[in-house]
Image (cartoon, rainbow, N blue to C red):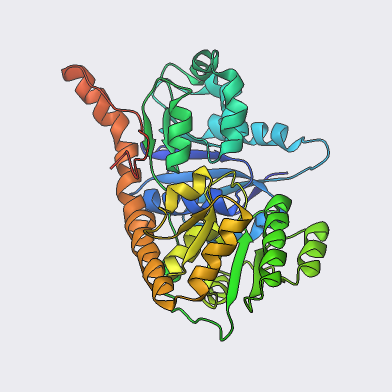
Length: 394
């Protein structure tokens, strides 16, 4: 059965938002957590329907107390939790009046299309893809996406992307406007002091169970150990049994921690943060490392390029040989480490702070009402997100 963990009043509120989510991973929470707090402070009543995945349960308690949570137990084998989630949503729509529905991810989007005709005409629909895995699934639907989206009701959903890469990719699928509201980093990462270890320490990690990221980092650790740089290696994340064996074989210290302060303390001891592999969603740990002021060395991938500009606020590599060269360069040059680390922190503060998300999200939520008013007065045009824009909605 669904679990209701918080209550809200005001079922007849004119600003009442229903969020439909799947797994609330760290990447999803980096947008949804701050976004729901922003709407809460602005007076929106909110209900979040989400899967209760044990691995992400520590994030559930981080939502603002005034937000109502409806959690659905995960059944890994038969996926019946999606049928239960649909039942929970139908019950909410029967008993509550919502001004907006926000769909987070592909499966919630697919579920929303099934239930769209239950929504009154005046309900506004928003969609946030949250990652390239979602967009890869959407790509085969390009020719029918508009008609499927229309099942959500008379109005097309407003798309709010939580990263520049998501905005760029989904702009190639839909003709409608795409607004970008980048994910936010918790303030404690900006406030935590740097505390470099005595010996050179390379830190990496992944907030999801990504075996490929572990494998690539372990290969780099072996290469760098052979180069006799005197490096130690730490991995922060939730590695499974196979990944734990790989980390042990590569002499990498694993740390499975969920507490933000503990993660900040562990990251802050690193000399360098390395992001290996191709991220499928917003690279949360890279954002945390930047906020802490670590110099970052990252693989040349779309989500990493969203945050790192080579030579300005970090270094990008294309091969193991380049990764070794960049790390060696930073180990030998403390001034460059400090310069890139400070630039990374400044950029993270400029783009990924809570205040930045506040302004961008409220603008995105206001835009449909403003557009309707402008439409009544005359033609209106919204430009889609463009290549390389840090915040097209600003």
